[in-house]
Length: 208
Image 1 (tube, rainbow, N blue to C red):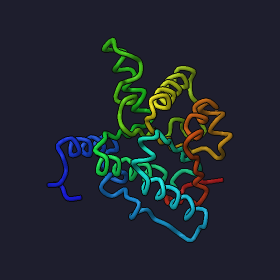
Image 2 (cartoon, rainbow, N blue to C red):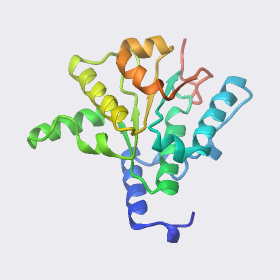
Image 3 (tube, helix red, strand yellow):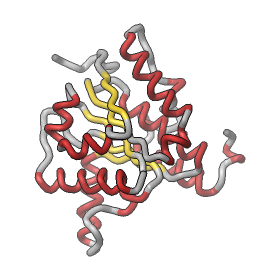
């Protein structure tokens, strides 16, 4: 789709997504399914195929509120694929898409509280497509407050049929449930799908 073919809202949504990701390595103009680096790992090929299948049936999946959980080793391209889907939602459906890390989400919540508003910003609850990046830091844990906020976001979006993609550096689905809460994981994968990114880091920094 050429820039001249985009609506004003689509242009605005793309600019916002680029600001949120910071451009660079996570620039939505370069984070595409077609630019994802694939190797000979059959599990990697399977995961990429599942993400491509979600994109092939984008309208059905988004309108049905079908969420995704990407978990596994750091540096394996989880956010790349999540941003590729967010970009597709903007271009093909004209919906807003938001990418946010836990650090930025905490800042958003503090700013909302200071303004006397709800603890969870509306932009995280009501956007058409939400990507939550690394809600639990590698080797870390959520505070009770952070866990409550994460649950409120995922639960609200589950109840309103609004899809959420969570990328998490957990070694197993069980660890995801332990760190983020079983109710959060259940809402993400109950009608959606969990995909494990088990291959070697592209950055070569992962240590067992």
